[in-house]
Length: 184
Image (cartoon, rainbow, N blue to C red; front, side, top):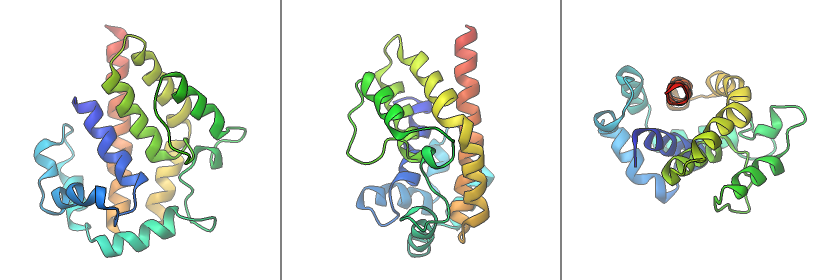
């Protein structure tokens, strides 16, 4: 798994899964113990230190639920809530056409899109590069800035405010990397 895939997988998991999810325990332990920074491919040491300081699973769980869960959540994690005319089905078809296995949950969740970018990178087929560019340009970048800004504004814990900042920088760095690959 390369750096691009690691970033997408970590960030996607933190947005997609609730903090009490058993699958997040190893990742949250790494963050809490300050070990994520050692293997994090981007220079975001200050942000990762803030993420570590805010890593309290009980506080995070309440914040996650208020931010992202249910109809009354303060920040919808779904693209279809942010882009007029966008529909979850078009994202689902895009990912299915590339062979990505999908659950019955909506495919346009912010975390799912980052996990999809990791999956596309791991497939590393010739046409997957173009699929990654399309994923970023069509399905992620048009709304993620607004989404992450709302997360920062509505989060009650420093963990999710910092996660939004880490994600904003990381997504831009990954898109820049795709552009550099495109120019080569």
